[in-house]
Image 1 (cartoon, helix red, strand yellow):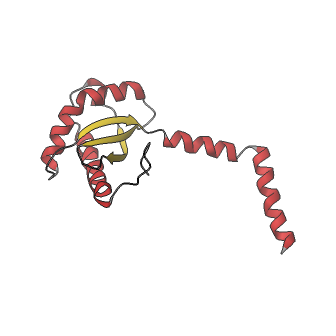
Image 2 (cartoon, rainbow, N blue to C red; image 1 turned 180 degrees about the vertical axis):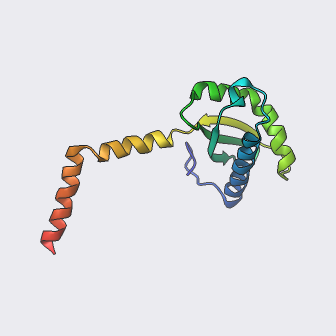
Image 3 (cartoon, one colour; image 1 turned 90 degrees about the vertical axis):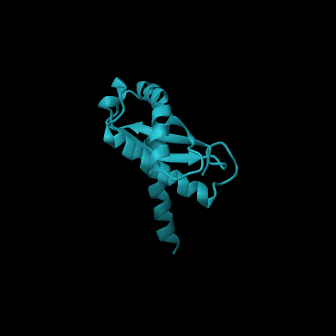
Length: 137
């Protein structure tokens, strides 16, 4: 499940990542960020992946409503120290992880695959396979 590594995350990593995702969502929902690019932005935190030592986290975000993603990521990078401080007050961890923000492209990949599956040539192949199963039984 981790991007770029062969190992899957441990139970503690998953649990802390999920708690961190909820805490980030709460910080963004409060609207306490002063950056003008984040003032009226709606940010969805889709996933948080945390390192095995729990010191670094990557938060995958997407702008709700299709806003400018590059501007959002730059603003989140500027606000990361403040967000880290807020998270440190909310969560009971020995170390508050450093948070890096990345754009979540999984929705784009899903829509691309969906578009591929809806192509007439693929639909015809899929319909042909379903018909072959019925005839052979």
